[in-house]
Image 1: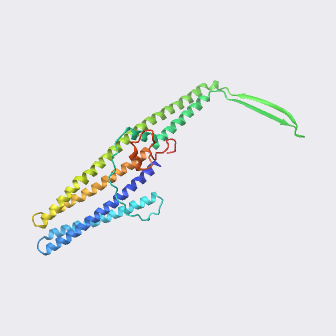
Image 2 (image 1 turned 90 degrees about the vertical axis):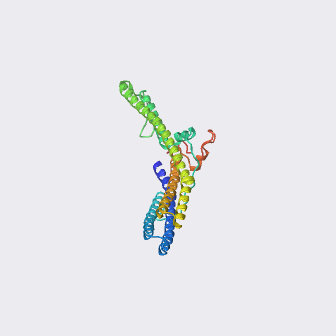
Image 3 (image 1 turned 180 degrees about the horizontal axis):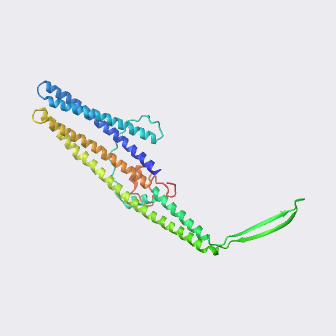
Length: 317
């Protein structure tokens, strides 16, 4: 169940990324079409070479083909998401906007405590330990004599009058099987110790997973901020400068294409970093047993206040 929910959350976050990739591809194709028209006009006026025109034609053909692939990938993601949501596989979806960057989620004891308390596998291990404790108690009680009392009455078949009554007292003598009961107790105690060790191991694994997820969320956020605030603005300036120099005959056409590719890669990398951050946030929500992503924003609340949307620890994972 947890893996299915996690898969649905991942597909939900991949959908806006697919739409964003198609949007960037459409903008890139429009730029290439504009540049091809301008270059063709310059070529006819004797201000550009045939090589430049052919380069743009090739770039436009590659972009058109890649855009078609991205559109098919988006349709595939829609179909997979419809299947997970029990909808018709051809059900349409509106274009989804990629969300903005989420706030940082630092690694904290509060976050770890929520994960250890509500993580489904941890709850399963604790229930198995309680079951092992009950089996140990049952094995120990099996050594005691089993005392039973029976009453039996008989009636006369002719008129139904009471004829005879008997009282039975029975009990078992398990002392002769002491070694068998001792082995049963030892076996159940070993299972109980193994269950408790599995709880400790699962809690350590949960702590490690939370630490890895928070580190991945922070890395994805820093990467997105880097591309948004530094790399993309510089790439836009470089493209504008290269294009202006080429149009005035002082620059190389190759510099324009290189600057354009650099800007395109930066925009795609920013979108993937934002999508990756939200995917990691979805996994963290699932790991902590929270109801939604907004619950992560209230983790700094007092410890006496339960986290919103958190599942009961005694509920079935």
